[in-house]
Length: 388
Image 1 (cartoon, one colour):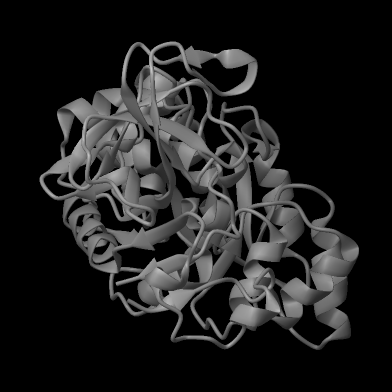
Image 2 (cartoon, one colour):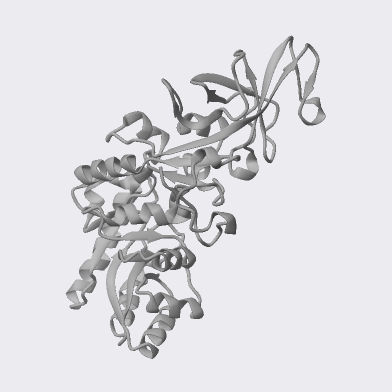
């Protein structure tokens, strides 16, 4: 299982060390099953029957953007990749990725120069598109853009009733090429249909003016499943790529078969035996109810594991479920065990499978009050990630 860490954050001791092993890691770590990613991409492709532009923002939802991008780049259904901020796109290009990249986020004048130089497509919806035109002219290049139209989500984008004027403005720029036009749904099915009508109206008006719009796209994971007619030329699946559904309702429906790709693990760092009344944690938050074995696990909220799970969530050690007690602290959890064979260094599974048991991310989401999106993207980028 090869080891990978972003070169932007990797400590010097680990640099260029492709032989690092899981047993060398003392703190928490993440294991990513790239075969599961492949499975999910194939399932999405069969369901949607259109081209895919997976969204790998927020460090590929915690899975590690560079390694995931390298894997996706080799898959035929994948036409391009989306990121959320310029820095993510720059890291992918600097890591040797050649796949078409679309940055969905904002950018500065200086970043516009890098975007053009590294052949990154950019979402545009304001007069800042002129920065790209200027940078491209100075570099004797053409800047590729995707025009974002706000059809009702109300976040960013050119308002649909003003979109034609903006499209014409961009189409007339000498050093800018429209590669695509897109929108984002509100994930309210009836209103999504209204948004689609608005979007298609803009497309029809632009085409009537003879403007080439390139690729049209609107559907993220939720719409791929609930509103398949919105597929257009391409779809933007995000969390489904990594084996999770965009809502509790879709998790229950399971319209397609997805496999979670990520397992979150830590180690047993201490085992102690308590007698009745012995305290654990700050403010003596937990007191032993009798003779108990308590395990300290080496993971905490600073690693991205959620708080508020004491007495509610479980983890796996040696294939057995163990209950969390006391509060999750910055670097530790406390776990009550009924086993007498737990040893220092044993693996603890917080999300994922161990033996015949599994801790579902969806269950932790329900217990913690965080969504699956939040749980994954909160995972610290410094956590070592191993790929298989």
